[in-house]
Amino acid sequence: MNPRIGPTALVATLTALALAAPALAAGSAARGKEVFQRCAFCHSLAQGENGVGPSLHGLFGRKAGTAPDYNFSNAMRSSGIVWNEASLKKFLADPQAAVPGTKMASGAVDNPQALDDLVVYLKAPDQ
Image 1 (spheres, rainbow, N blue to C red):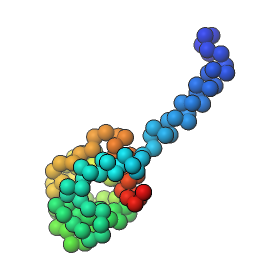
Image 2 (image 1 turned 45 degrees about the horizontal axis):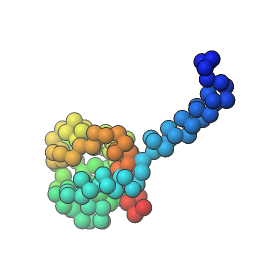
Image 3 (image 1 turned 90 degrees about the vertical axis):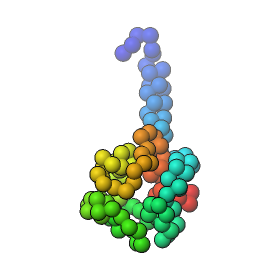
């Protein structure tokens, strides 16, 4: 133990860090809504409303390449991905690396906090 820091100060500091860490790591739907504005040029959250990209309504738990009435790339249809937090974060961090041949040529979200925020928002966009 550092002799310049008393046990009470050390416990208080560690407690504050422990309480702050989840808040920093957890996503925010409000911030995610802001991040989604970049996605909204191509994607909608409305059911059946496809644009340049497919509707993201009901995304979680859905097999990639299966949204109705959208012409997916062969790469996306055969990717075997089922959308969940981990698969979505991996894809959004680098779409072309995650699914070579995907039609999503841009839109990477390379900031981990922005990814967390976006995922929270996409799970419950009405927040």
